[in-house]
Length: 196
Image (tube, rainbow, N blue to C red; front, side, top):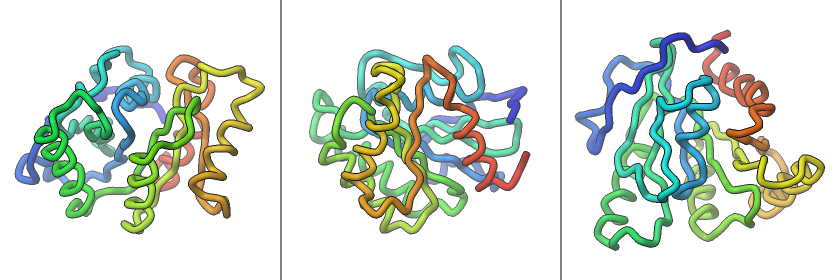
């Protein structure tokens, strides 16, 4: 899919700030610094639409990015960031929980997990939460450029065998650097949106 005019629309901290135009939403979840903002920039071939930072915990609101008025990429705050105070963490977790719980426009959840590490406790909790929600989702193992190309498939399989041993859900590699995985992800996105 070619996105011609992507734009940042709003940072929301409560439902009254969410967009009201009814467009479907592709939601990005994952721990802090797993590459959610980089994912958006890579998918739409822009360098700086979504603000990226090497410092985890930068996104503390729900960011809505409008893709040509066809759908939104929704960047949720990262979870599991240790330097955030307990009160801040609770607040951020509250935003995430409320959004996932009440939002009716969610077309697909994309859970990003760092390909170099086994899923942590927070990843497992989020995975279980998504399963219980019954919403469509895929898991992307991000930062695939950080390991040898020949090891990528095995690493994806390993993460899937921990979270989804019966392998009935989609797990795919992703790399903001290598861009070779974007077509497969677009296919998954287009399928749920039912647009070309």
